[in-house]
Length: 358
Image 1 (cartoon, rainbow, N blue to C red):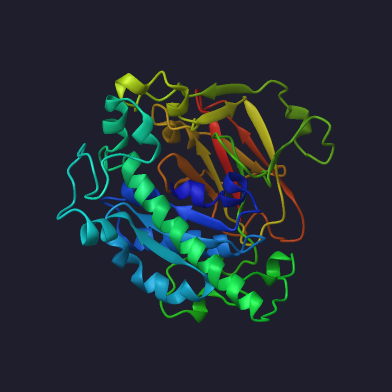
Image 2: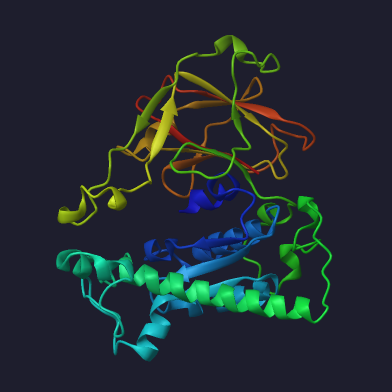
C-alpha cells in the first residue's frame, strides 16, 4: 500500500475527480507516525494532481477518529474520512459482526444479490470476509459515498441556478488546490519536508495490473541515444505475473464476474535502464514483486544514475522496496531528466514492479 501512494497518477490517472484510500484494514501493527505520514502523502499528492481530486480515507471499522487531525488540516480542500461501521452500528447492528456473518441489520444481501441463487445471496450478504469487508460491507461504503457526492452535486446545481459563477481552475499543476501552501503551514505536519515542498505528485512506472493512468517514467529503449549506458542495453525483458487469486469462495471461483483484475507483475533483465523525468526532491525508490523475499536480493543490485555508480541502496517501506536516493546527491539538478540503470547480475529472480522518483 505504501508504494502505491507514490504511484497515484499511474494507478488511477490524472483525470479523476476523487481518490479513495482503502488500505486501512492492512494497517494493524503500524505506528501512528508511519500511518500519518503515508496518509498525509496520499491526501496531499491527490490534491496536487491535475484536477485536484477530493481524497477520502475509507476505514473498514470505526477507526476514522485516528485521522481527526489530518481532517482538520485538509477538510477545506475536500478531504473526507468514511467509516463503514459507524452508520451500521447506529442504524442496524448492535455490535461489529464477526467474520462471515451475513447482514448489516437492514439487508441480508447486496442489491444485485437479490436475483442470485440462495448460496450466492448468502455469500454476497457477508459484511466481513475477514479483516476485508465482504460484498455487503463494500456496498455500505459505496452507498454512503454515492449519497455524499449526490448531495454535493445537488448543492452545486442549486448554487449555479442562483447565479453563482465559478472560474475554472487552470490546468497547471502548480496552481492546484493547495496553491502555495507547504506542510510547514499546517499545525502538525507529519510528512518529510522533501516530500512536502513539491508542486506535483511523485513520478512512477508501475508494472502491476490494472492501471488506468500513464507512467511518467519510461523504460529506456536502444533508440534512446541520450542514455549514457545504452551500450549495455538488453533487448528482451522477462515478464512474470502472479496466478489468479484463490481468495474467492470456492463455489464462485469459476464465475467471470468474480475474477480478480489485480495481478502483481514484474519485469527483469540483467541490465535495465529507466528514464526519469525532472525530479523535485531527489528521492528514488525501486520495488520488486514480493516473491521469496525479493527485497533481500534487490539490495544486492547495483544502481547507476546516468553513468555514475550509486552507493548501495537501503531497505525501505514497504519491505519489497529499496531506497536508492533520499535526496539530491549524485543528482544535483531539478532541471532535466536522468537515467536510472539497474545491474541485476547479483540479484537473481528479482522482478521490478515499481520505479519511483520525486
